[in-house]
Structure formats: structure tokens, C-alpha cells
Length: 118
Image 1: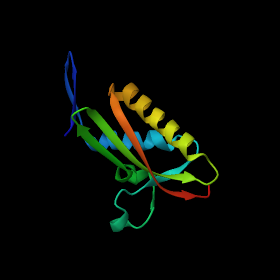
Image 2: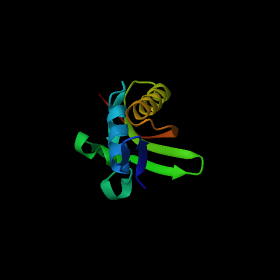
Image 3: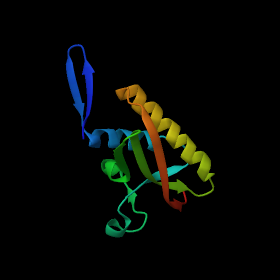
Image 4: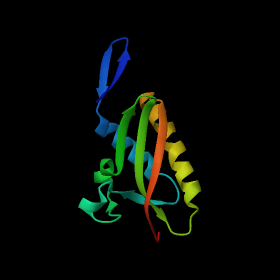
């Protein structure tokens, strides 16, 4: 379901894939994050590290009754505090999507798929 933004000169439709890539890119800017992982572990292999060209595979966009929910599947750097990395990723993704699209993201769920050396 694409997001529709209304302006005085017309409407803009933004696909879920664009939102997913932007959320994944914002997450990769956070310290302590090695990369994104595939959300389909059984199909793609356990904690497969995704490159920048496949960011949307590690992000799931859901529209619930109480708003927009984003699930991020990440791999964290060994030796970092997982809760701090997750909190930073949540804040960064909410901030970037609000600044770029004006989207109010209600929940950013972090699913840690693995821990790797940096």
C-alpha cells in the first residue's frame, strides 16, 4: 500500500520499497551496526549479511490500526551494547522518515539476527 502525500500542487505516491530502502539506509549510518540481515532466514540462510543494493530485504513495512510499523532485521557488531545500538537505530529511522517524507512512524521494531566482528 503506497503512501500518499498531498501538497497544494498535487499528490505524491511513495511505494513501500522506497520507504524500506530509506529506513535501511538510515539504520546503516548508526554506530555498532554491521549490516542488515534478510528477514527470510530459512530461505536465504541464517543471518546473511545484505549489501546496500538489497536493503529492502532486511526491512518490513506494516500498516496497522494504530499506525505505521517498521521491522528492521539487523546484525550488530561484537562488543557493542545491543540495547544502545537498537535504541539509536530506532531514533535514527524515525527521525529520517519524518524529515524526508513527514511520516510519523509509530513503532520501529528491531530484530537482532546475529553478532559479528566489525
